[in-house]
Image (cartoon, rainbow, N blue to C red; front, side):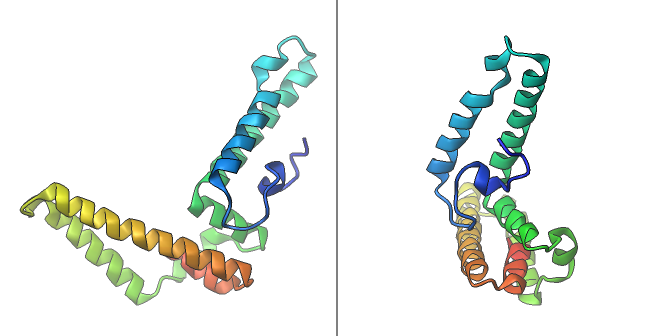
Length: 156
């Protein structure tokens, strides 16, 4: 295993935001079975250390790729963008207003007639927006619109 590879190469996946989560999970489990340290107990100390390093790398790669937000941040990082610095000033006023409205709605849940229903409604809104942002990012990234993709990650 080459731990200098990008995370997509480790799992044999295309370098894009839209990946097959089932395939990612299957390949993760295959790699875990192959490199899990308990399977290398009878090997040399060097081989055991390598197994531990590989397993750590595999776990880190899987954690990044299974999360749509982390995957998007990782993709931006592959283009040379430091998302931590770039995202600080990219939120548009409309997006900030939507965030404040959602926070107000959450605050008002306690006094709603049926708090559970209202909370589910808010969750549906947020889930829908998040899915739309994922799609938007995927489209922008595939067009190499790094600026737009960075703005969309800020919204995510």
